[in-house]
Length: 214
Image (cartoon, rainbow, N blue to C red; front, side, top):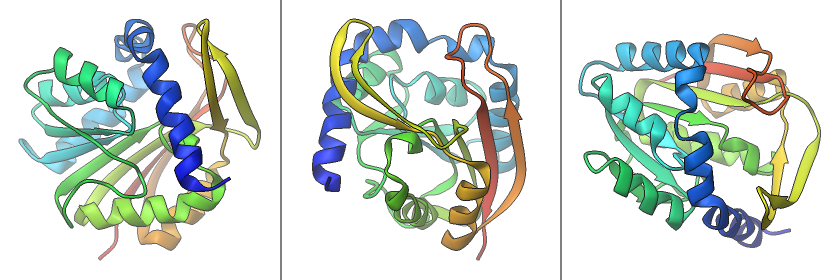
């Protein structure tokens, strides 16, 4: 399936669940101490007031959290409905519509970027291009935090919270993601894997913190 069609399915699915997603997921960082610690590390290393991209920002809750810790986040999401909610709920933060393979950002625009569970909607063949595009918009030595579900399966949903959808969730192995990051021009500096929290889907989660080389 070609990328335009595949990404269109993802866009339409997230447009469909956008409001409910915000209601169910919008406060998730309150229950995720590891996520908060890693995000805080990104903000600290990026520097006070530094521009930080939130790639696949959804309803903007992570970007809002980053703004509250002194960063200058820019949220980017494929779903227009998600972007509309993010702009409504976080009026002091900038949000843009965009695809991970064609980011609406200038070369070297960001000091850091976070991609929390957004690369899981890319096909495995798209990961190298996505990481190369992320490297493009980062400054030299810029940080990237990537989070994903661990495994090798693909979960296809046709219904999500009683809404009709058509979306795939690609589980990924740490070594695979690390290899793509290295090939794209990053050095992986830290990894973390954890079990799910009680309010999460029952999947193992992995986080890779990588730095742009050169």
